[in-house]
Length: 371
Image (tube, rainbow, N blue to C red; front, side, top):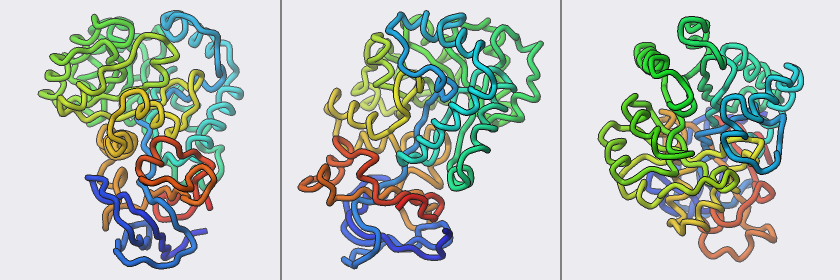
């Protein structure tokens, strides 16, 4: 139900610096109207954080959850397990599985997610149909950034490039090693000309594709497990962001990115949950792994999964942080559940241990959609 005004109270993770403040938040007509310091009684209270932004997913993989362990080339490379399975999957099953995942993304507090969509225009159409079949509250409020790519086996001269660009927010490619260089250069230039985003994977299997990826000057690069400080400096100089997918890297066994060095270099570092066949698209789980593996300050981890990822996707003006005037995209975490009771530091508690079961409310564009 749309509400003209909604007041929340508790611990507010406030501003771009993620300062903890006790008080209340007034939401009106989809915006954060007021943030106050007084303690007041409200129907919804707890730890108020920005809604999550998942900067990298592959929701088409939802048809094949938990495959056997295998080398990443055989798992997701061209002609590998994933691509062969998708080729054998009916359109109806593909759409239905993606619909389930989209609803799961929404239910765990993510308001924006970016999907790298294989299959050209056809693949993009399937994702949009999956979204159209979700519950109305999901369809109307969840925001999807679609990064498409030409269908496998088609070059820039055979794919419906106009149709592809018109249907996506950007282009999302796999490694530069997987595609002819001229095709990648064409797509990168065309994305820039059409004011669309361009992104790709690099440094996941080895370091050999990192230089070529940086030279294309994408908006962001995913994985970078084999990257070095000099790569981060080049990325910083070219204003290229990074997206890490820690649970996915653990599953593929290819190593973890040098996350401390990324952050120290000044890069904007967002986070994604990557392939749905390997991991649930649950940002709570991603935060816990990042925090406990790297021992990074919890506010920085929360920022990676909210504001930083919003910046990666050029969405920071209306998502990623809590300030007066911004769109009201919020998650309220209960602090009285058995799991969260006696948590001494709210941000640490949210990052290290909170789960979907601790959500008191999800507010997207000012509307309470879970309560």
